[in-house]
Image (cartoon, rainbow, N blue to C red; front, side, top):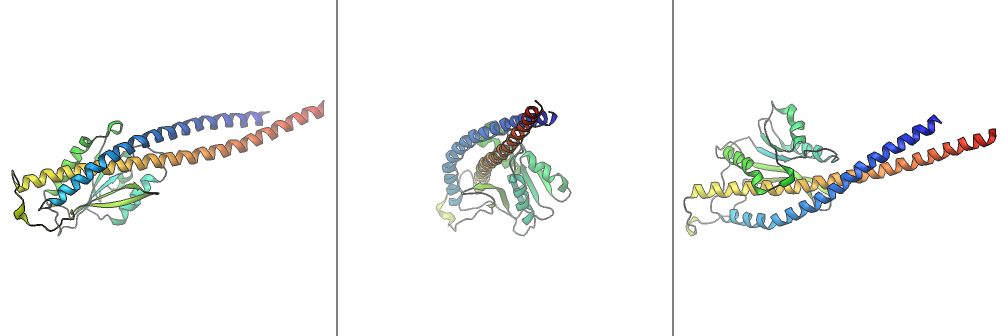
Length: 261
C-alpha cells in the first residue's frame, strides 16, 4: 500500500513540474515572437547606419600598437537556458588575454566572471528586459567610447549567440571599422571632423549593442524553449514509466486480495 502511495505522490509531483516547464515554454514562445519583431524592425536601421559610418572619410581611432582589447559579452539574466551561457564563456576564453576589459550584459555573465576580477577589468551593465529600447544602451555606449577616446585598446569585439539554422556563438569585430579608401575633399563636415566622428560612432556603438542584444535575447529564448521541450519530453517518459509501474503494483495488490478471498 505504501509503495502505491509513494508512486502516486511522485506522479503528482512530476505533473506539477510539467505545468511549470510547459508554462515556461509558452512564455518563451511569446517572447520569441516579440523579439523577432523588434529585431527585424531594427535591421533596416542598423544597415542604413552602417552605410553612413562606412561613408565617412575618417574612422574612429584604435591604438593598433596597444595589446589590450575590449570584449562585450551578452549573457542571460535567468537560468534554464541549457548551455547558452557556458558556450559564450568558452568562446571568450579562446581569445582573451590578461589585462583586457570585458563589458558584460546579463547577470549570469557577471557571476561567471567574478572569479577573474584580478585578471581582467570587468564592467557590468543591467538592462531592463521588459522594455528593451535603443536608449537602454546609451550609458554603455558612452562608457565604451570614453575608453576608446583615450587610445587604450586595439579593438572592440562582441561575443553573443546568433541563430541561422542552429544556435551558434560568434565573435563580431566592431572596431576597427572596415573603412573604404576615400578622398576627404568631397566632404564638408560641420561643426567639425572630431565632433562628427565622435557623435556618429557613439550612435553606431549604441546601435550595434542594441542589435546584438536583441539577437542574443532571441537566441536565449529559443534555447530556453528547446530546454523546456526536452524537459517536457523527459517528464512524459517518466510519467509513462511510473504509470506502468503503478498499474502493475495495483494489479498485484488486487490479485493478492482476490487470492485471499
